[in-house]
Length: 123
Image (tube, rainbow, N blue to C red; front, side, top):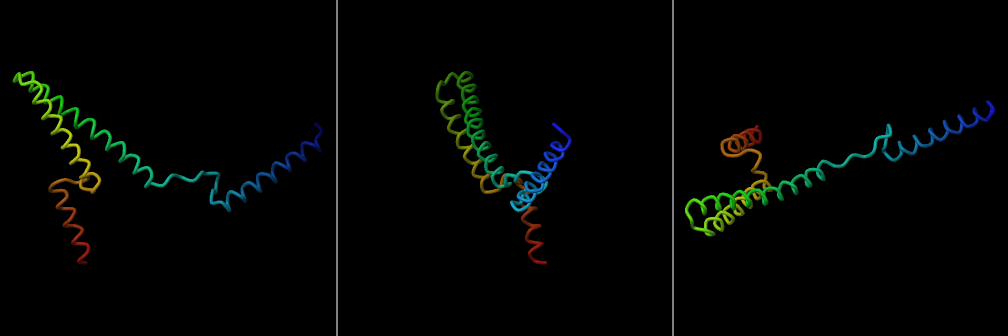
């Protein structure tokens, strides 16, 4: 290639870069960054994973404790069945609290949070 061809190619590349940048600016993709996922979508997927883990782990822990009591008391399979039921019920309660928003602060922390919200509303 000759120097004039190189200069022409360089100019074409610069023109292409300018046009690409203007299109990106119009589309809202300044500085070459891609649009980010919304925080709501990420939060929903993390809640879904946590719900699945709560169900599996809670039921497994309840069943495991029931099995231990069955071996100790020689009452197979009744303690394990009861443990599975209690583990599943506990998981459902935890999931309900999480979805309703009660899981972040529990007990006294929740009461303090409610009190601080009511103080801000009055002012």
